[in-house]
Amino acid sequence: MGKTVAAFTMSLDGFIAGPNDEVGRLFKWYFSGDTDFRVPGVDRVFKVSQTGADYLKEEWSKIGAMVTGRRDFDVSNAWGGQLILGVPHFIVTHQPPQEWLGEDSPFVFVTEGVETAVALAKAAAGDKNVGVGGSQIVQQC
Image 1 (cartoon, rainbow, N blue to C red):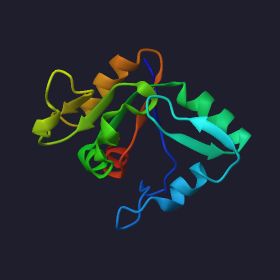
Image 2 (spheres, one colour):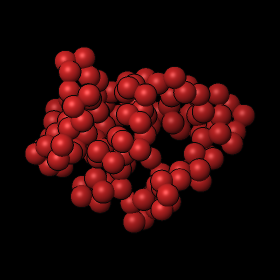
Image 3 (spheres, rainbow, N blue to C red):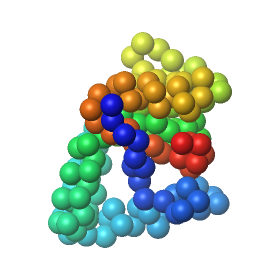
Image 4 (tube, helix red, strand yellow):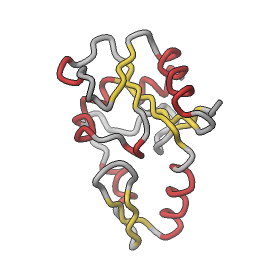
């Protein structure tokens, strides 16, 4: 089984955004270099250093599934309906959004809690890691 890892840089208390959901400080790094890095699964290109691009390519290739929370899902506008890194996403929530519950939804909504979401993600990831996002979900893990 894959091991669980944090997918994004964050402070020690588990937050990647400021009080107004501002993520500029984190994302500034993603656009401060001279090397194009295409984010797998989405239509986004970062500009990082060559070292940063090499690191992201290696580390992100080890992730086979993602677990995050409903707030992260909502604030990100469901990532435009695209799966970051092209891997399954398990969204922990009390109430799944009705507009995303069809058979063609790329997301799996888990109402049974973090432990269940992580177990499902580990099964989906196979021998790869499970990325964890969203401060509340990271803290619960």
